[in-house]
Length: 353
Figure 1 (cartoon, one colour):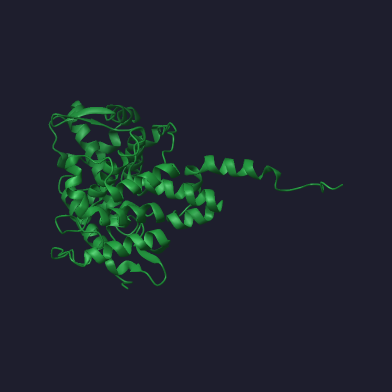
Figure 2 (cartoon, rainbow, N blue to C red; figure 1 turned 90 degrees about the vertical axis):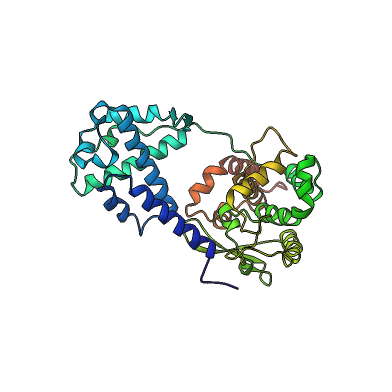
């Protein structure tokens, strides 16, 4: 069993590093120092997200602020950043709610806008902290308030029907049924694994065959942030994986994809987008009201585990949350139910008295 390497993770990180370098080639030269400072504290995927947010901000300045109408992105200086006011930042956040880019409408949710402001605050904060600039206009803007959304999960009967339909092809269209017979063991193994362990979709597609340890009934995953962890699985997951692995022996993966656990119909490692479409396809056979995504499968597992164990720390540990408060935020409603159910557990006086 491999313990020191995850090919998929390494490949993804290299891809993100190339992407960062490409974005930096467009950004003002002074940005390089900031992104270099993040190299050992933030994962490559996070750095890419920050870089895209910063690039979006400069694109807005070029398009909408008259003082920069004759600029190219490379012309910006730290002095230009320093001259901006809090109102300029507020105008940017309002603009990106709905705008047009290259003939296409672009929208940003409340959460996305908040993330972009966080990116800008970190960006400005670096230069302000080291006294490259004397003003930080991002601090003059209040952080957007997020409106709570109902947490969507699958009910037990929906989970059962969902997996039944994966196995049988029930309610699939004629076109979908064409590939179902060939791929149903893979699909059942993958979706049973996600529903039975709560792993993230990125962790799932990154699995190699050698990451499965049937002797100890566990899988080795690389968590968000790069930490290695072991996640344990039950009998249903074990059976689905063994059935698929027997079939996988007959596959001929493309070079570079030989070790991948889940293989696409093009004989390459399955990607995140493919799993998203897979979940959507089967979820539509169960419910048209709930928007079920791979992350909702993770939430479903977390809910089931919490309802059975009543242990928020166990759920946090299994899901790979670094902070139990992250877990508590998602399962606060169930925690209230548990507290309500426990109201009569402690007896103050014997009923025989």
